[in-house]
Image (tube, rainbow, N blue to C red; front, top):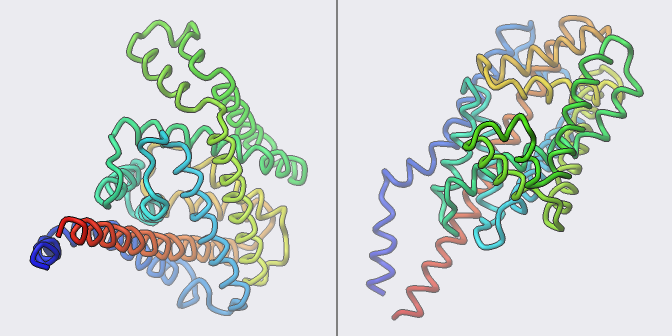
Length: 328
């Protein structure tokens, strides 16, 4: 009994605050999204006047996309150092929401920190870095069907940027197909360090059963995200348009590839608004949708991070209790 008390007492407030930092950053991102909405539009918040049932459905679809992404990312870790689902969900949600306010893709720092701070299997930095790179490769391959559909259904104005997205997806397929052989390419073989990195990345991203399963989860992530965009367009009175949703999704994903941004919110709002303006949507409605989408995505990421953190702490507490009882 005393052992259990000492274990509970060791859970100090500073340690709790450190583990809660990603969630606090998510909440800050949510507040910023609401303030930006009130600043740029005449509405008090982006979802004013929206059909609440469809908006809630869009939020649920966005939340499901984070769950699918977490499940896919988890399968890209080595089997001996694979974190639990709750930790992956918390890391994905915290990184997505903190990206609203963090520049220069510092959301990856939040992702790595969240995964390492939560209890469970110890995961090294190299394994996490390789899993994130592999996630980017498999993620691009999973987006390929949506990019093809967007090119087939959109107008000529988006054909050039969507073809760039398509070529990027095809290049990622080539990396996955070559596996460790990608390090033998003449351009990469000139640098021993770059060759070693590419060899490890190619070896970790080979087409195995886990990689294929991860690809399936990531396809589900993109499909639910596109479905959420469609419901949100409908909720805001812009009509039921899967084509708009696909183009918005692909172009926003292309903008997120940029490693240097002034903040994820600015890039996301600008990309989404620009796409809708080019599709003929009035300026006010285009900006309002982009802000509403950012608000729901940030809220869903906050919920995902909260669920993941609570689940991880619950399982960690149960493990400590079992160890304490068995050692008593």
